[in-house]
Image 1 (tube, rainbow, N blue to C red):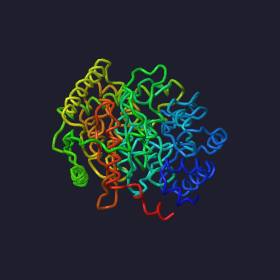
Image 2: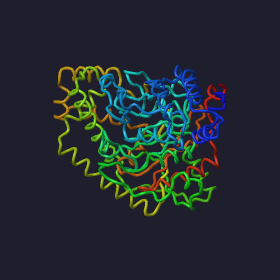
Image 3: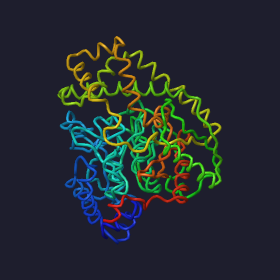
Image 4: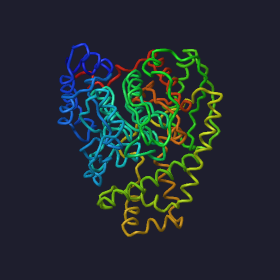
Length: 499
């Protein structure tokens, strides 16, 4: 098999080729390494190569549905025994995992050959992947633009043909955002569908879910079959799907009623291309016989964003405190991480609990919406993939924040409310391009980004569908129907296709 043949097949097809003897797992690994060597200078998608571990896996390859297919895991919450899980941070680069995460073990049991870890922002905190420890990830479609985050390395690796699918996780859009930036399919499963253990019970209070970014819907469906199901000690269970996802996805969905909106839930501008992507998706859906009308859940988007940011700040504070207890120095963390940790530390337990209690209201309001509509359609992003550095705090803001943090005044001034304006600006800047994705995380519902649009400048821009809790089947069936009506698998950057 040539590299060209390798790039033209999804994970399911590659597994079939191994099963029939057309190729071998060792040959596929070599092809993946060859394509990675070609792509890495352009994308910087992989932060740790695991060739030795992969060759060890070949000696005891599991006879699962993906047997022999090369694969990448994300360097966050996806522990691989004997290796550090750095989470994009110099501060955590020496913390070695004692055992595999359950989801990693299941990937290996499915026969996937893990040969590397993908790049991400420090502590998976942003919608762009630009860690100081491992460098920024470039979008394979245009290196001047971001690949999204936090699973930005995973998306860049898939879009550059290194692997047909890669592992991600999603606590605020971290599968869907990079999928939308890179022209890929990304599904965030329901809360509890996939175990976060044993290192975590409910990662980010259950807002985060494990999943994959892929080029084909059938790959995602089969991967979900592989990783679905509880593990002993998991804090909660979601209803069993009752079907095999890989089988269910071969059938079209029934006629669906879909509510659509392109208005930003936090009241900020939405780019004309994001609106056009959604409008074109509406036409495609209507052509397939689905009913689509303007509708939105009765949820205060600003309140939801505030609740999300409180959780976000609090989690950073806890993660930094845990790392420091293991010997990490505060200066080893990036400025934004230190600032967010200070902000999180300045929030009282009562204030954090009050924000957590609001999740119930958001979930019930969305459930009322889903009593009438099967899905909610929005843009995935409010803006096409931005250029590197766009939306970052200004140099002057960074100097002020660094100075206040170093002298210990940042926490005090935050508690006194004197920095509310600056904090609000940081919050607005961080969410202005990605205001649509957090709803599914706080409510625990499944959501997907589908690659149906490319901008006039040739950049991908996905649209998002949010479904009922536990109903990944309908989402996957619709995605497969859309994939057949408007195929995207063969849309790759020119430099990838020409290889």
